[in-house]
Length: 502
Image (cartoon, rainbow, N blue to C red; front, side, top):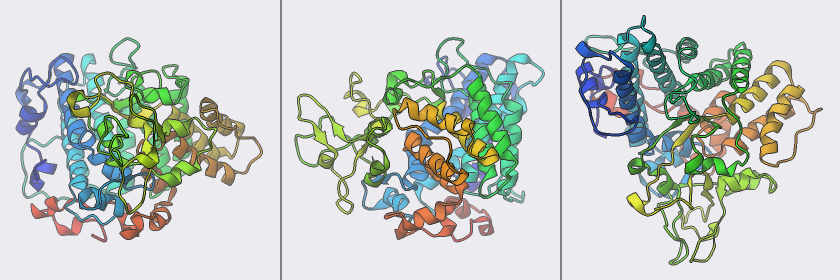
């Protein structure tokens, strides 16, 4: 990805946006351009608007998810995941020795604003008095809220834009909004968007095709309520709102828990009844499976070996109960393969500084056909929201509002029952249940990029990362937020806007 001029990041020309980003085709994720759109012929139909939604999604899976930048920024930077590398930008994310020109920090930051500007165009230019346009305006609100939810939790106070840029104003004074202002903006946007989005876009059993739905908006809204109830906003009134919104998702009747935890992560099942919102990745772009796939320590042990860029944690593995099905559904401990012999994670090659570590099972589908096609790429997407999260939000919010009630415990036990794990009994204290809920977030969502955001809102990120065996090499409390990329300041952004400490 090239170094964006600062003015381009925040003031992208509409003509550039239309010519390079809003080209699409009949299929939501295909690449063949049908037309170039401009302000004078902005979408006049749902078909036109679909092109723009596809264009808005493309930089996400190319520059943020398929390129793996988000995994480094939101995943490798927590205490659950590590990398194979021993130097470079990837290693620096793991060790917290990154600089302000780290490519992954820059890619996530720039892409968020790129998508926000496109989303602003949808909201501003579509005819709000026409029924066909309402779900697409709501889609624009969802996308910019979603991007701001990353910016505020990864970079802290951020530049807040809610209108599209049609021309460059070089004299404009740039300021940053506070975390509270950004959360309020996100919540207001989602409250407007949630009822104008469809229950699903396809009208059939495929509930998730990568476009935001009512369920996705309500899930993001519930998460933003409980996030703003914690650090740094600490608006305790939002616990009740988060509880109510999670209950709406549960009561919708649209989603259900898949019976088998491990089956949920097979490519064939990724858009089924538990999936609320995900990034759909074309097979030609899908590097995640290859990046998580282990490589052999010695020759002849692992078939179809991968890059092993992202690795699990033996410490985390040991926290799982052996009778919890989520253990094997999360970690690749033993690999059965024919005709080669079975391999244990001690056979997986890794950075010698930390010894051998287990692989992550959630991004592997070893039984899929044509595994060697496309250089081991796969169509495995990224799960942003799945139905299980509504239960954890409900349990956490209920416990914070009303204490360790049967309602909170039943929500936790719904997930533990699916995993054949021991049930939580009534009679524990609020603090004890809070600790259990925090652990459940890990058991259910390890390696799904929830942990760092949770540590931030729980107010424990400094304590955890200051004692993590890898992050301890560079972590300091100011690094709870990443820096604004150096490329912005090289192009003229006022240095006083840099986050403290950098």
